[in-house]
Length: 92
Image (cartoon, rainbow, N blue to C red; front, side, top):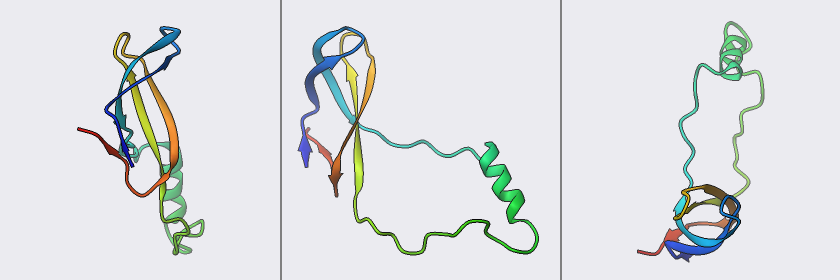
């Protein structure tokens, strides 16, 4: 699916419709020092191994594409969860 690189939509900060820059949201790297990660490492130590079932077979073939909209006037960013698509392309 191809979407334009600029969309005119509602900005909650400006409280009016403005031009927004469109980009694709990408998740950052997970921190190894967070409590859940540390606890899991501690539980995996010794005998017994993995403490919850590891997913072997993935059920879904696509992911929901999250679009990041940045207001051109106030630079406020909104995330819009989109539909399931194989590939999201931003028009050049």
